[in-house]
Amino acid sequence: MLINGRDLLAVANDNNFAVPAFNISDYAMLNGVVDISEERRAPLIVAIHPDELSHLGADVMASVIARAHRATVPVAVHFDHGASYEQILLAIRTGFTSVMIDGSMLPFDENVAMTRRVVESAHQLGISVEGELGTIGKTDDEAEDGAATIIYTDPEDAVTFVRETGVDSLAVAIGTCHGIYPASMKPELKLDLLRQIKAAVDIPLVLHGGSNNPDAEIGESVKLGVNKINISSDIKVAYHTKMREILADDSLREPNSIQPPCVEAMKVTASQKIDLFDAAGKAELY
Image (cartoon, rainbow, N blue to C red; front, side):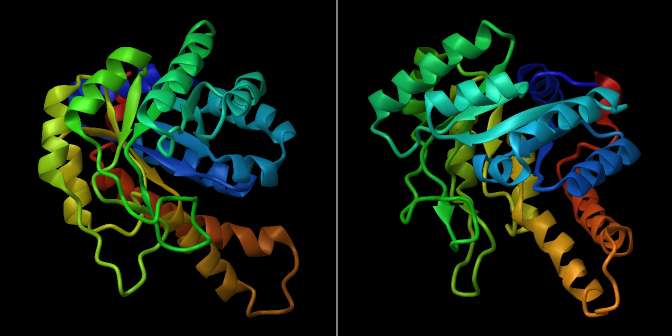
């Protein structure tokens, strides 16, 4: 069942759970995250970053949308980290039901102006909009881009941002980074700050950089009001680690010999996230 992000996250906000947003970069991964969501009866956000869309090719989106329509659980197809109004227009034309405009690296007023412009266009077509306030860190060049120094979300600024833009959900900065943390970095979320932001705004909150953080902190963030958590690196690590293992047998060449075990390994990781986010069984609420 294909729906937009606003309707998907409203139920999560009302029922205190988080919907996993799994970033996919090939069609096998798409089938894997849909299959495990159906098995666990969990709502799903299929997230696709501009780099991933470039790799997949925009023509594949018709099949992604069709797969979401066929799903027996609610699915939003989300354009992740759109960097410009023009990118968002491409996402809208391509069929995404949810878009993120990321103006977090811009001055506050410019972020507000660009986000408001996206909201005005997307809402006319029933497409939901996620904005971002504050910055997400970066661990390596393999991950999505991020800031060298995290700028934490200010709760008062969050109130102004939500009021002035009309966004449907807000990605907040409480200490996460994109990618896999090296041994020299210790992730630590500012959960007290999350409490303050949640008390200040009433729309669903989003946590980017959800991979590779301590389960206890991520689980607590859900209890404190995060309703969407982005997971990209963790499922890709599971998928490609298994693929490296499979490809040690150099006699294999057919995708049907190589990819199914990789998808199963990815599904194990995705299932653990569904449990951590308290999303299992929540499809029945829609």
